[in-house]
Length: 158
Image 1: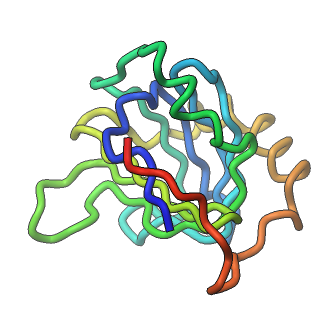
Image 2: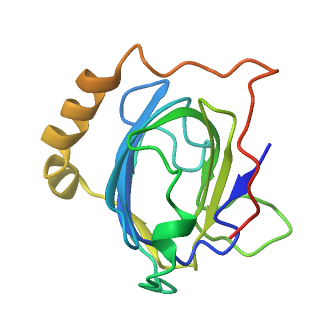
């Protein structure tokens, strides 16, 4: 299984929405690719479960080489939540952490700096409602948990 985004520098901004139990939808903007939609089975960890958050990566790099390295990133990203939290580990300082598995079995992980992500209040969340609903309707039923023996792409971290 390949793990991608070890450097997560090519993730610019985005939002993730877990207000529908068992489903996480959203969009992230990547260097050279632009926006990528997400439909993941699962929930955020209890610290932010049932909420919606937005983020802007303070370490983003708009690197032209990102296009060749991100070429196999599917749009939309369909898969399963592994861990999405603002406080992922008791021995580490709290920080936004986003981890998922694609339907192809690829393992993606994005760690942001503290303060790069924030929970949205009801007014801010309302501004994402139409986009979240469109993503839910477009991809519902297409995202299933990959089988244990699902093939994964052979690619290094980047």
